[in-house]
Image 1: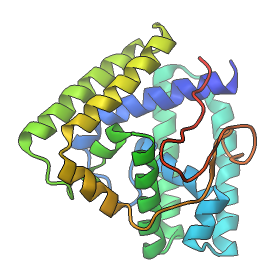
Image 2 (image 1 turned 180 degrees about the vertical axis):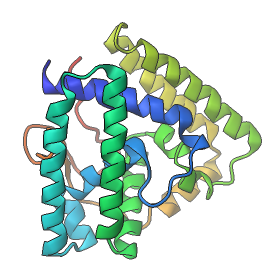
Image 3 (image 1 turned 90 degrees about the vertical axis):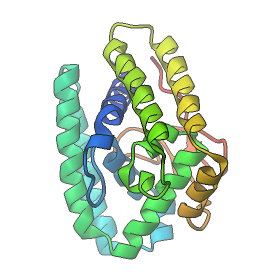
Image 4 (image 1 turned 30 degrees about the horizontal axis):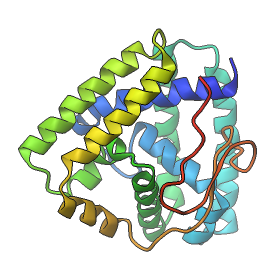
Length: 233
């Protein structure tokens, strides 16, 4: 199995699994599941490191964590879906703990802002609306929360059908889900999200194999509407 296919299976499966249950879990510090993994990925980017003004010592620790994750991804290749998802959650929880002691409070806050900005640029409202820390600042109504849960349930069905189903069709339906999540929000709430994102992040984000952000992958400049290349099915 090529790395891109493995990554697609892990990312989509774990994202959908976490989305279905995130509202029921507290998320201290850096978050849980894929949300935490995204933060770590951002910290491997030179542009983000420069924005956060990381010290040489902090950068060295991140490189060490990168190597640990690279090896962990290799170990995941031969696991079944459920075991892979479980190991991914364990890995990101371990990484969360490391990062919670690595960054200063102001650096952690800025990292959250950058992550939110990138989610907005990619239209990833599913991740946004399943992030308890963000949801708490949007004052969602009971009706809005119920709609999010209904969309999460659709996502859970997609997760269950991912391995056996038509992956191109599933990716298409995933895009449709993103539109449904966005439609839950009012214009005022969308404006509030932009405020929460803080000062604009204009750095470049590069996608590639785990631990190698500057190698094969699609660069994503800090401009609205630019997205990473879709993984091969």
